[in-house]
Length: 152
View (cartoon, rainbow, N blue to C red):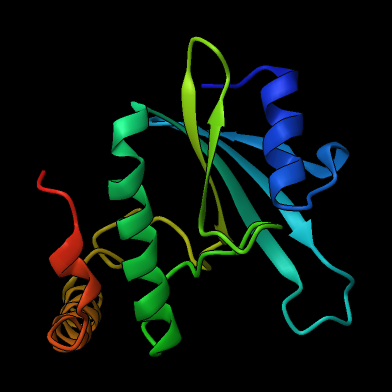
């Protein structure tokens, strides 16, 4: 999926990204673009993702809740793709493009690669995966915002 140039420019502006630096990666449930952040000396420099997800406008609170939770996990040491705030200090920005409504988000690009063979896709991966899920579960117990999420 790709978005129009007008939508791409509007979304890039919301996250203070130079449109010319965006590289389309694809995406199944939205349009995904990669960009580099800040100057090389900045503490938060590195690859980032800018994503345009088509949603119904009434789904915006659910998308915001999801990113709030991911942000909560990342702030407590879970290895997630940490969300990047927009120029307005938001984790998710709505973008009404006429016929399509988008949730625009940005996050650090997660390191790593796809497990391609049985050597990579095996017990060591599953053990690490289970550890991360356990860490998320423990943190969920102290997370209050989920109680205000809209019903699915």
